[in-house]
Image 1: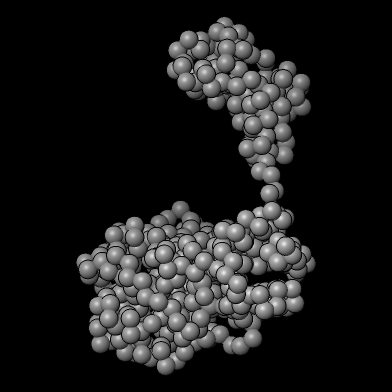
Image 2: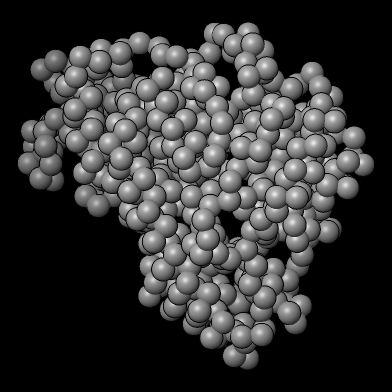
Length: 472
């Protein structure tokens, strides 16, 4: 008997198709057998008839059954021709059904997940629906049928320019802005722009491993430069002889270190003297909780040495896949030559929605709301950790962003800490993936994000972690 699960992520027609296909492959339905008519099947299982027809049509398309006019759907022979490994792997129907249910209903292993990256429920759904309808009913809607400007919609680039000038002191024109489907896509383009310059790149150590992966995939040799209390070690950078460096100066990832003005000027001087390029990833610049956002490195650049990267992923939605880069003016001719045949990597409709959203003042209001919302969670997290764990830990990278680091003063190791947390159904994360040179990684430090937990969940999760780690 077929089990139809209306709560499954698998469409009902596909559940029917999979069930009948397995029976045919297992020989339960033999050559010449006639399938139940679509009308009777739909009535017996309380599903729509066209749902059954879709399943039967797929079986016909793949050759499992044949639709004979006047006779119905007839099973075709195939079991004798199945490879032996498929015959051996065919499972009993009840076993397969149980496996199928478990595959689509992943058990909730963890009560609390201190992950970093995904966001919770502050997305402006109602405005998004309204703007979507407004755009699709406009005269402009016909442009959804066309390939659009490779740099993105001009009106959105203008809105981004205005916002960055006000919030980050960024100096640019709309022509310098290139919209990209995320930071990694932007970095991939930058790699292509500098593929003929030795393919060496300096990165913060530790640093964002998502960026490192892009550089490695493009054949770049990574030169790790240590992070100090005031940011990337500029003396080490100067000794490295590289001309291209990727940094996160306003909230270093993952340590949270902020580069002071003296080092920013020193870094820009290095880039000017070496004819170098600084890739400034300003990934969560809006999220500062007890001070104003730090002005961007690009705002201090007078020599065109900085490529600026921004994103909507940390404050609006990572699922939008929308970010941008700002290229120095001298680099634009090379960009236009190299990417002349490219089209925009972000859907036109999505760009228009974000443009309307920003133009109506909703983005600034959203940022204020998000900052206040995350500040409350951030403060609760720090207060709870301090109360529960006291001098057993050192908190790093607080007062900004969506994560903190916990350093354990008694030298507890990452793997042990993660395993003990798992016993209490709490998920925490190592920092070792952020190190290029793994043997130099700090073994007594964990990353805890708070973007997907509410205040009560943060307190409850930390209470369990304290029991797991210290109530022995």
